[in-house]
Amino acid sequence: MTGDNQAVTGVVRKRAAQPFTLLAYHGLVTRSCQCNRGGGRTSDGIVARNRAAALPSYQILKDKLAPLDGSPPSMAVLANRDRPNPEEVAALLDFHRDGIAPWRAAMLQDLAKVHPALVSAAAETAADADREYARLIRREISWGEAAAGTAQRSAELRAKMIRIGQQINTRLTVAHAYEILQR
Image 1 (cartoon, one colour):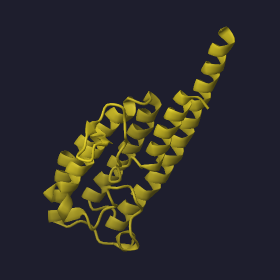
Image 2 (cartoon, rainbow, N blue to C red):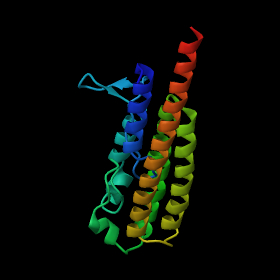
Image 3 (cartoon, rainbow, N blue to C red):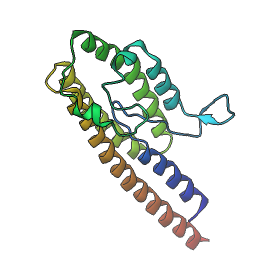
């Protein structure tokens, strides 16, 4: 495998392992990053996720939502059949506006630096997540149902990202072989 293929594979695997769903957007390391205190590189998506996690609206909701780090929701969260009360609905709206929307924009920009097909898959998943989030706000589904939906979308997106990565690798391998044959 060439260096370019390995780089793409690594980036796609990281993205596939780090779900891009409404409440489980996870950090992506890209070439244009901001440095963190440890000297490593942190993507704009991770910075936006950390800002979202610090919001007062998230603090109200964090025990009822799937974790922001992309890990699976706890059994307690999945078993929660309560629906949001008026205060929680207000927090959900604030969190979407102040946390999720900026985070999503940063994540899509991170993905665009790698390959447009990744943006398409992530945007499609985000639209599905927004529909479910609206249902939660309207109190049509419970916290547990919303968390289960997040976990389902995460798994589906992970599989899509892996397929996209394999397609990118195949194209790069074919292009590389063609280039070598032309020499």
